[in-house]
Image (cartoon, rainbow, N blue to C red):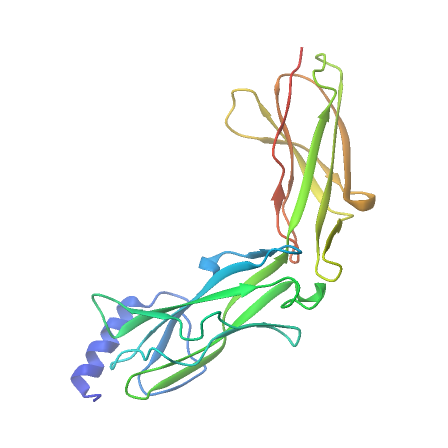
Length: 256
């Protein structure tokens, strides 16, 4: 099946499709190649305490004979404490219209907070293992073909008072930062974290950072500012390697 002419044609197609940093197979037999692996469309995964998170794992591969539909099921894992397999092990493989020797196979997966991350230590980088087969029996497999950050979901509140406030008077802005605990299935205060207090003047398009505050006991936030003009106040947390970023909705204050 793999004549030199066909092999040359598929090699050319793969070189055009491949991008810098494309995945390279750990092992392969024949001319089959894993070209790209994408988890959750390239975004981090934020997981709370009750709601399951659905996402996709996409594998793009090419072989001169075409990609076989029912190749090895991929997995997403984190050490010995976390493992996720596809909801449907067959996936959905679609050949490219212009280059049918290249297919993208999409697997739908679900991360469940009470099952998959067994404790809080599994927050961080998860890795995908994938394998593909060609219709002619060629095979390629790759460990850690792609990575994704699975982080603990965070919540934050804001309140600016008094409302309304006289110009030049002290405005107190409070709130709290909490994050999902995958062991108790509750939200707990996230202490010792830097959070930005931001302000947007009424009629303006962008927020500016006024000051940075560190969360205290139980994730509490509190600071004071001078009331200058009508506008919107909010807290913004950039996140950490284990906790997803979060920004509050704005609290509008009328300055008189």
